[in-house]
Length: 450
Image (cartoon, rainbow, N blue to C red):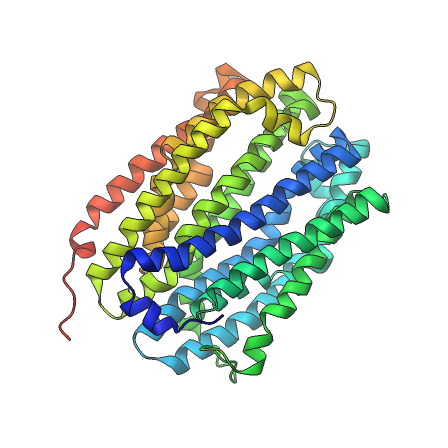
């Protein structure tokens, strides 16, 4: 079902708009997160602890592979929304067309580099033998498929801009279901190796990417393909607006690579597996926050471009409140059920892994007491074309603060690693508050006269 996005963004009451746009977005990301969780469960249960550790060792590079497509997708969605708010439909169509071509080209380039360098990258992490071989297999499948699969991330943004909010939600659910069914078939029935887990996800992404672009090729959407006109200013704008998400992905993966290298040294496969459990827990919660905030960006950008600033503030108020509620509920669930969460991912869990994981998860749960605030602030800044403060929050949260705290908490050993997340979250919240105070005069501007 396609909604009239102009009416939705400009006329619908903010609270109703939140439920119409944000709830489907959260469900979409929840479906994606659920599949990522199932991916870890399937690999851990069918292939064992070594394969589960290998998956977590390779995952940062897989996400880096997706991050450039996400940069272009998110980076183009913001100026497209603003252009539509200014009634510049032709420029919006040109940005859309050029962005799609850029994503395909980036998939070819980054996929080729990752495929060729996979063995060296995994060895650089300190992995050897079967552990390293499995990680290389997993990474290379994603690298081969990236030219055809990575565009699905941008398609989600474009569908929401065009009013296909529920269509985007159902597509994400379909992708998760397809990937989960195929992975169960490949691992549980065909007994393929870890490469089968990666192939299942890539197949699901490819099928849904084809489905996502059918409305655009049929010409029934607000955005339409046109003869591309690449301009330096447009490319710089896309990069600037997409940089916060890109830097968050890249910086976060650099941090994960650093953490994995430290954990291999401190505790071997056991420590890497526990860290993987934390990442899967985070990978379930963060998409919920991302889904709620990201799905409101087209509406915020549209109203910012139309100079309806009071409406922007009302929409963002809903975003901050909802993010806080989800985060606090996450604290409760993780803190109360650490053993059950651990057993989801590790078959026949040993007492050592269970003991370490329970303590790690309880410390990790404190992260979400404050994580919601920086997350919502970063999304807010991005939606109103303020990439610099959004990038500052992003890089600080994903790389700067964690690296500083690695050194500060080093004497605590593994406990210091688990506390790193909560400490980073507190520092990010403080930084976000400072940014909001610095920009308070601009954010409180009155609406333009009609």
